[in-house]
Length: 433
Image (cartoon, rainbow, N blue to C red; front, side, top):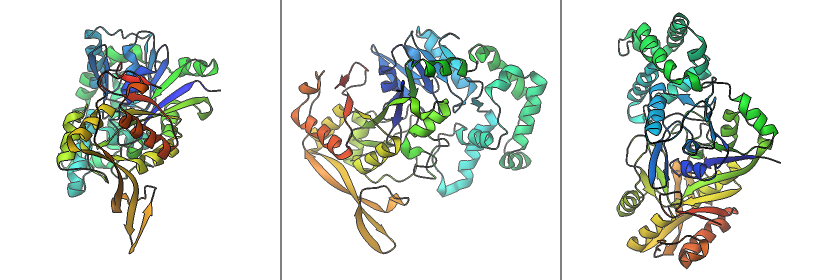
């Protein structure tokens, strides 16, 4: 039973989910189900690099059907530009292979302004969002005042204007911001120059995804659900408040796609051989000196969406195993094995966190779970001496022995097999066990 493969991130995002989604998506229906253009998925195929933010990575392959699901929030300009970029690169995009759910919500320009205002008002307590309007759009969705892709298709200009004005005024922050003149909008121009402009470009792709998805579930057709962000950015399970505005866990991802749990066959958990994080929030194994710089430069750790340098540090197996259990992971994809091998060769050792010393309310103990106040944890490390070189390795048996020791240690600690191993940026640099 089950015909659905779910690809989820196990750290703080940027683990390589797009690469794996693309790799396993031959002749499949592929669904991007949460987040917005605050997520960036980079795919390198046949030495061509594609930086995607809203379209599923599967769109690169001609025999797939790609769906943007109801749980995604859409910046119309970003999506339109992304389609143009891929078509200019020779990628086929047509209503036959791209479906945009009419239930997906639209990021309005005032959401982006509100996002920036939110961060300014927080002062030293800022979260470090991408300032793409994601949170305010999800807030309007939860408040039931959002504008959906269905509105874009079925409302005329006057109806759209009425909805936009009502929606914006229903937000107390928007109302106070407009009253103080920190945000002003010409709403008729917003409808005519933004919504109606992109309606002409995108309307042909908007149709009810259930027409395709539900029969595929019944007939056991191959479906791949591409997660965005990762568990520790999950609104409920992550490092609140330093999280995203959706639920990128397995449960949240399939719920946003409209898929029941009984249909799930595989849950591939994506991880790096080290950790990286963008934005604020706890990061117990972060390295701010030589090691952090080495990882950042060797792993090219700069945000796909923002270009911001990522915070980098050693692999945290405590967080990893917690994420595996919460997500119901059946197999792991370990990316950047080549990068951490280079770090070890230059630094002389590789460190892996195996437990925490937890100090809180006057007591101290060693734990192997992530507490709600994880910033009070000090990592306990196991060291692996030296590094390795994976150049030319195309099979598991060809990997250096100490690299295999590293992989086996992860498997023994987590109780989950490593199925895919990334030893380079291109999808062909993937070892399958």
